[in-house]
Length: 469
Image 1 (tube, one colour):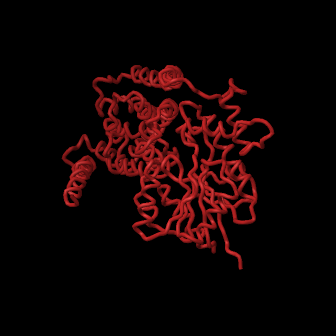
Image 2: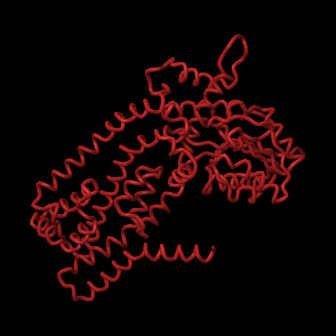
Image 3: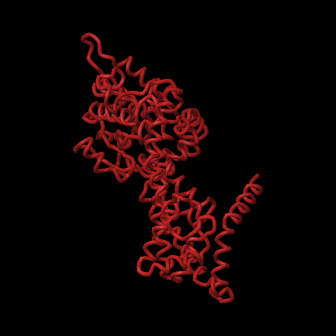
């Protein structure tokens, strides 16, 4: 009986600003996404119809199945990538293939549009002579990996998205006694220089058939300016010129948040509250004097303070408890906190994220890995930041907006993580006028405990490091 072979293509949904980010600033986010789509479509067209293997698409992020399926069409098997870093996700893919009875599995990335049937066949055949097959890329990584069965040791402790990936994988194979076969070295498309080299290879000329035709057309449009006036046009200016061009765009994106912030300051100014002397009792007297509209104004002020920042969030929370008691105070504090934190997140995402994406440092090394981690583990990160307040409240709001964190993860993590603090603040605020009550003492103790968590955390971390040193 013939052996079963699985060819797995790892790809991302082609969202501008989320794929091929290292091609910026020379290319716009839209142009980079257009090129990425073309490269993937060439790989799918060239490799999915072979009778020598079953073609499977492993996509990321996991909620984009309908978008990816609508893009690449029916006739393929689709599965979301699962796991933390890239190594975890590839290990999961090999395990998935093994569980389904595949004898040999090869995983390829979406950065090498010139991969063809002979190269893939060579990889599968190589697994008759070695436990592990790698296709080295010129940037120190690999464009292909093949195994018969998942080998966890290959993926542990690898510095993904660095030039050390290939050398570390070789060393891990050697240490684990895993035999290795390497294919021809190829260039993948990660940098603008890679784009130019690929264009030299694909540039149409004479009667020679064009390889990767979709990629060639996309490169022709982008690099030779056949549609120079639209969003697919390249940005090939030197770095200094680029920053000069990026600054006006960034300033335009800051205009709406600036107007909102100015309106928030004006709103505070129109109230009898003094920004230089805001106390819970003053806020309480003001909002209770508004009658029916008091809770609405309180929530609005709480939300807009995220842009003003001169009113401490703790003061607003204590005022909510002082004015409306433990339970209604908690509800209003949470409403204001959720609106305010969401506003700060969206302002940072709208005004800041695209601006910082223009800078290359965001797309390299540890910063890139951390940025990608916020997308994969956003809920866990924000939940930890809320429950263990290691960082200032407003800094978390704006920092999350500048990262790749998904808004739904941010909102859910904030809702769950801020609830204990909101309840404690409301309880403490509701007993401010009776500081000798048991309720005040218990709430104060809980408040102090929350405040000291970062200190305990740093102490335990230093102690753990000293023990392992």
